[in-house]
Image (tube, rainbow, N blue to C red):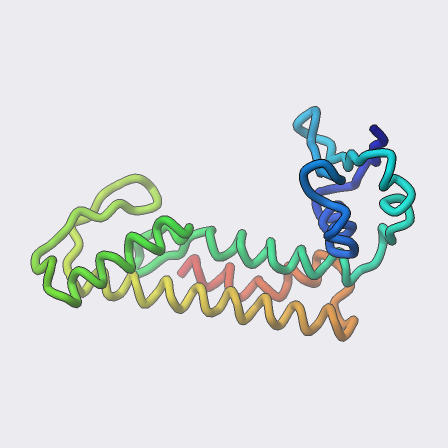
Length: 177
């Protein structure tokens, strides 16, 4: 089975973005066999098509990168009322469920709430409402930054990974406050 050494995961995403029909089970697959170096392995019957893909198309590389950067920042946590809070999808759901339980009266008192540093606080409705609002604001800022990056990439104003990273700087900086 032929293989192609890649600079990083994003180069593989670039290739997959160009021809998604060539990627998947039984087709081209990204691997990291040594845990460090990315490779693309693919069957002989699609080798010619894979090898003809443009490995340096900035848009094809940067559009998937903008999405993965948004996901990374979105899941990176925030500081709400001086407390570090997780923002991964499980944490988002748990906070939303707590807010709903307070809203419908299922919970009326305080609850134990686990922070990003694995410590616990006794949280009341106002605390959960504040965390919920901060997470929603953070998620909205992340998607706004991704959209801004995508527009910049499409218009060829953003042509490097560093420029895409810069678009997310305000979201990253805001989550630390």
